[in-house]
Length: 318
Image (tube, rainbow, N blue to C red; front, side, top):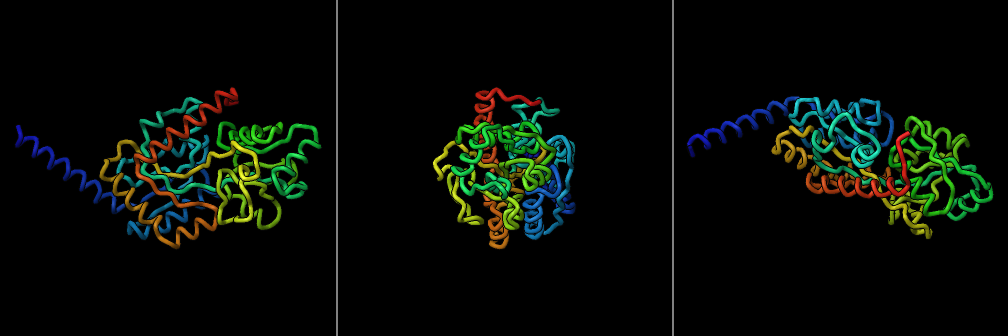
């Protein structure tokens, strides 16, 4: 019996090594939800460094539609050899399962490999609004004596929940107006059709630098080196807007543990490179590698936090 168990173990290890060797000959695909946004920017920066670390091509591939569901399904259906990975933002894993029934079990069918970055996120407004701080924006909004429209890239996402938190923190009546993505939201903020929005800083920076949008406060409790002169909303005396977003990599749950561990080590090595760290930080993004177990714990904790807010506000997917 011991001899048989030994032979089975040898065969299993050999097959695992063969799978890893075959995978090494294939390019790695980082599947993202949509091209052109901050997830795309971070994924491409990361892919360039990862390709050198792993000595293989790393391709960023956009599969848009359904708030990331199509991208996730493509990874779930892929060969579980560690070469097709989901480079995702936090919303699909922490918010979407609360708002809607997904066509797959997100905890059963996908496994966390590593968190990649923590985002600086910010409250951004139309630059023509005469407000440079949260207090000045509150005074402006109250003088209007009407509901203030803030754009959201859809329904049931982190921006919608940030808007709820910001309304609670400031006492303002804010309406989360859904759009199809962050790009049209920014267009309407800059065009004066929306008062503002809340989102990840990398998307806003070009428009902040051009003077077409203005950030009046950061999400979280610490300032960001990319915009060192901008205080947090918390720092300005308005508490509750503290939950930061993150981007991370997930794999098919059928991926062997040794492959996941190898990927995790490669990600950590790539994120330790000074040139990548400097590039990401200049965009307001903090490199933040984790173990798979740490990442899994983070996903569940964030989901519980958002579930409590959604229940309190009685929010629904509409």
